[in-house]
Amino acid sequence: MRLHTTTVLSLTALAVLVLSGCSTGSADSTDPTSPATVSVHSDGESAPASAQLSSAALAKRLLDESDLGEGYTRTPQRPAQHDDVTVIGCPALEKLGSEVAVGGSLDFPHKAKVSFSYAGGSGSEVEEELYSDAEDKLSRGVGRIFEAMTSCPAYQVLAGSTPVTVTTQKVAVAHLGDEQWSQLLTFTAGGRSSVVKQTAVRTGTVVVVVSGSPGLVDAHVHQAVTKATAVRSTER
Image (cartoon, rainbow, N blue to C red; front, side):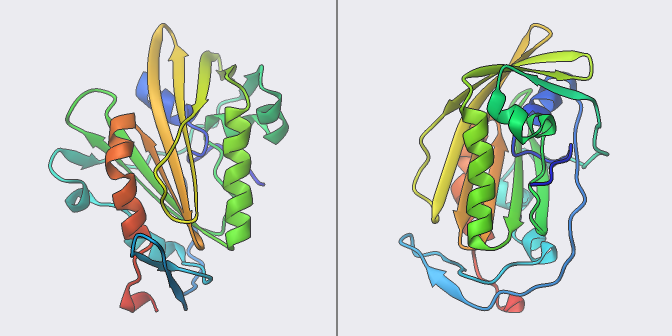
């Protein structure tokens, strides 16, 4: 898995955003593909079954302000930060590569991302990422990251000269799609702490990742999965 310091599948990058006002971003692929078949899941929603979605198609399926409701503002993507990173006390993450601990982007060919802040309070942010690839590749790739991150109940990350203590906890998630992963992470740096939740759901060839304030993640993950896996006639 190729890892670079961009979007989340580990959440230290988002924690640093909350704790210090920094941000990370990524460039999306534009390789064209189109979905061909759909399957109907137990919740009645239609979703891509075997065909992959292009980055452009994924971008149309991201949540927007009208989906989230009043009080949400889209957060502009900023250039990625490329600090030196060291993971201390978590062999599984060290094996994957230290950069995964500050926001390693998954090496899937099609992706899209959006971030929002909520006027309800400081630290109230939510981010959605969509990925598309072969089902087995998505399952292995996402599962590998979550397994590594939750294998260590506590570890430390040195991002440049800033030490960040991370504690992790695997949490239950509602049955959505074909596979689900969820974790709760607490980041402490400079005497300040931030709690971040991340939930990922795979439905066929699409993975939805919702990260941020735990309450906002819980409030919007079902909506994100529904919109991301809905079939549009213009994409057939």
